[in-house]
Image (cartoon, rainbow, N blue to C red; front, side, top):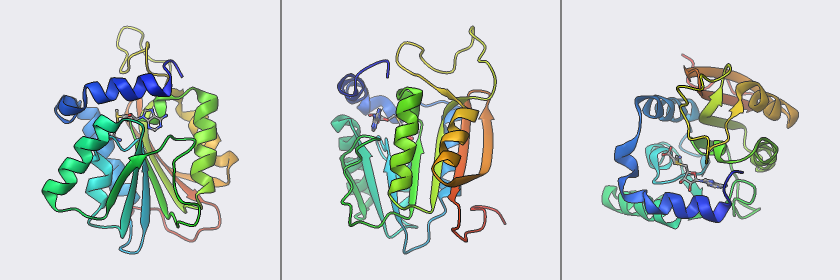
Length: 212
Ligand SMILES: C[S@@+](CC[C@H](N)C(=O)[O-])C[C@H]1O[C@@H](n2cnc3c(N)ncnc32)[C@H](O)[C@@H]1O
């Protein structure tokens, strides 16, 4: 991690009020795919990691039974809670949680894990640990949208901020999921530096989500 968890939290809290209005077309395309592929049923409990101001959590609230939204930035979560209140959404819970210690009651059932544009703050070995923790929740599906490299990024056009972000290659992420017993069933290339990965627990009998 190029910054500590506390530094990342502070950085995001400082820009929380403007965050929603500052996003790129690629971010919106990625978020939209994460929402579509998550595809929860009304009985499903979703864990959204690096939930921020709730782009994914709040969008899935009407489809799922409950959304457990976890983030390290109190400022980002305050925006998320405010938006939930304004929209009358009562089944999303924003609380502190870090990727590798998501602060989820171990007796809690988790069916689907989502994460959008957040995991790239961790170094690759930390990402692998975070993906292991996602698997340990028991979820049948993980939908990850993030900055990740399909090929060597053009150094003159970085989609990310090299001083704070630490994206993996798509191959590294796919391998991390297969290492913990998941099959990667979808890889969407939103941009040469933005991917959506859908991983299903091997043995779970779900069809590819979002497929018609
Ligand atoms: C670019 S925002 C994305 C927020 C939201 N998922 C979205 O799609 O708009 C990244 C979020 O990741 C959170 N974050 C960064 N490092 C984290 C970590 N180690 N554990 C949990 N959340 C983290 C930040 O606080 C921030 O809210």
